[in-house]
Amino acid sequence: MVKHHIKNINLADQGKKRIEWADNDMPVLQAVRERFEKDKPLNGKKMSACLHVTAETANLARTLKAGGADLVLVASNPLSTQDDVAASLVRDYDISVFAVRGEDNNTYYDHIRTAIEHGPVITMDDGADLVSTLHADYPEIAKNVIGSMEETTTGIIRLRAMHKDGALKIPVFAVNDAETKYLFDNRYGTGQSTVDGIIRATDFLVAGKKVVVAGYGWCGKGFAMRMKGMGANVIVTEVHPIKALEAAMDGFWVMNMEEAAPVGDLFVTITGDIHVIRQEHFGRMKDGAIVANSGHFNVEINIDQLEEMAVRKREQIRDNVDEYQLQDGRRIFLLANGRLINLAAAEGHPASVMDMSFATQALTTEYMVSHQLSVAVHEVPEEIEEWIAKAKLESMGITIDELTEEQKQYLASWEMGT
Image 1 (cartoon, one colour):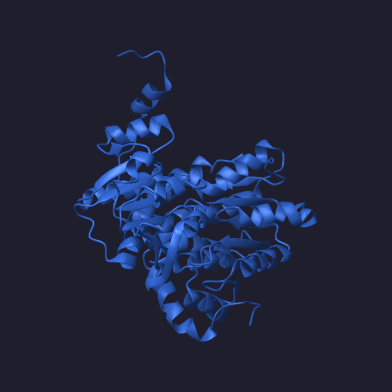
Image 2 (tube, helix red, strand yellow; image 1 turned 180 degrees about the vertical axis):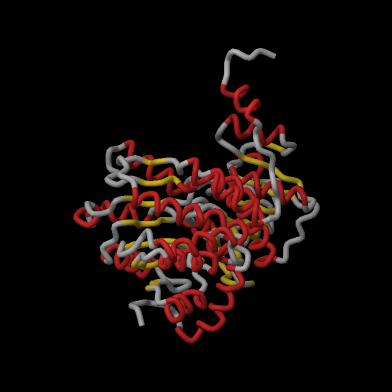
């Protein structure tokens, strides 16, 4: 059996069922895996991936291995690991996994170091913790890495900052910025799964409540849309004037967090930035306010300040719910320790959405192996995006029109008038 650190190998039977169930709804990734099995585009290449260890990710791992990759998979979030899936990947698919749900911070980084010490030539990241650790602590290994894939907004922000500062040493594909990723994974995946996690954790009735959405990027748009559809009065907070204007013209209330704090029943951060909700906001919230995060890291809510303000804390009054009582008796409920609510309290994105995101991951990995790229943050090639979109449409039984030769000529010409 391959090297691993998981919770319990005996959970593998249930994990395999979960992996196979997700695979049923991932036809595009299936098509990629079938070709990879024949062509072996990653043959002999060592890979290290720091991703959410879920059933959908398992099917990506199977695809990379089918392509010939020697893969080590570690968790990108301590509360997102599905322990039964990790067990099945080790037992049934012979993939090295180092991930235990609820692992502490030291174990989390021990696993990342294990993945780096595997000596990868390709890495795959969900939040850039692997790549940043690689750059900081393993410069000799970094020299041999031909590139990486990053699939989160937070990770892309970090990597672009590294490139701007001259610290980035490897090419990176901004998988998160692929249209087949952010238009669908972020808007529909995060939108639906965030609602799912909140309801599972709280049994919260959405209709009639005031829901504050911090951030109107693609994830925030998706969540706000679904909350509105379920009858909530949605308030959006933003720092970007164009996004704030868009939210207002989409029919949402827009205000700053200080104004929203005493109004909201539920607060959800989806920004990718630090301390979006902090002491001055907690101090204005109503009794019973619920606070959750659906951004990648648990830094969007200043939990340390909430701890300092509380005179009493009751942990796990429900699964994934902690109660903080303030000096004046008001209670604030924090969900999932500020971790990703859609993965900590639910199952993450539906497989159908991850089908496109993970097909993009697999195909950009293949592209990276066959092309020499400059050190920069690169966009996913358009031909990969188009292939995935067409394959997804085909799997849904949808056909679209094609341009006639006359139409192509018209679009390419400046000489033809109206």
